[in-house]
Image (cartoon, rainbow, N blue to C red; front, side, top):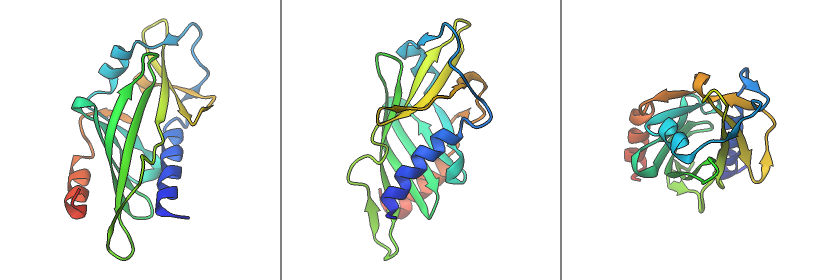
Length: 169
C-alpha cells in the first residue's frame, strides 16, 4: 500500500474514531447549523485524530489548516478549511513526508478528497457532527460541545513546525 493511500485511509479512520463512545443518533429537531456558528466553533482549535498517534488538524485563521500524522512515518498536511452554506465543514490538505530514499514526497491532490463533517444544531443550541466522505454518510452523530477531541489553540504547533522545517515546506 502506498504512503498516499495509507494517508487517505488514516484520514478516514481518524475522523471516524473520534466518535467512538460518544456517537448518537441525530438529535430530534436538529437543523443544519448556521455557517458562522460552525466557523466560530472550529476557528483556532485543534481536532485530535486518534489513529495518528498524537496527530490531528488545526483550524487556523484565514481559513488555513495544518495537520500532523505519525502513522507509518511522520507526515504534515498543509491546506485550507471551509464551511459550506449548509454548515458542512471540510478540509483540503496536501500531505508531505520523507520517502524511504530520503526524498520529500507530496500528494498530487488533496489526500482528504474533501474530508467533511456535516454539522447540525440541536434545539438547545448544541452542535452535532457526522463524518461524510465521497457522498457516503456515516450513521453516527457526536456532540461537538462534549467532544474531548477538539481543544482550543494549536496543540500541534511544535510538531507541525518541526516537520515543515525538516521537509522544507
